[in-house]
Length: 137
Image (tube, rainbow, N blue to C red; front, side, top):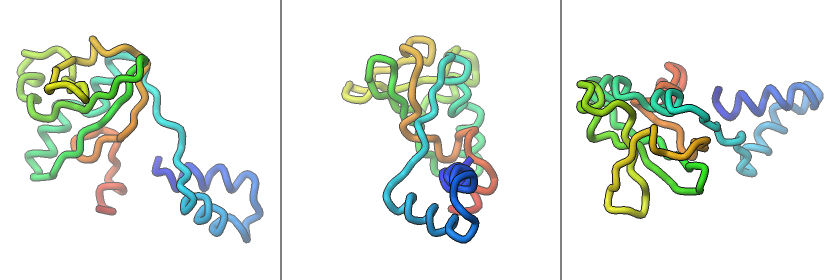
């Protein structure tokens, strides 16, 4: 659900109808964001930005913005969007990730300490993007 809709649902429960829109606008302008999504399983992490979704996005000539996560130890990883063919062919059993601050050191979802927080949701190639969100680009 987009941030605005999440916030609007909360505001509707506590603010009179006449003031809801202005309240949501003011809170968003102040920089409010919902809490980060937490992923607790390898399967869920693999699905965050799947190899198939990335391949489909490339087939549609969409630029891909990789997901970014923070592991349980505070290390930051970016989705490896360059080796998805190996994932699809079965050469890699899990989604690949690059640990930031390294020389593109590769990890797969099964080696990242869980739970992880999603710091940047995937744009294109991510299963979280809805058709409504895509149409707003």
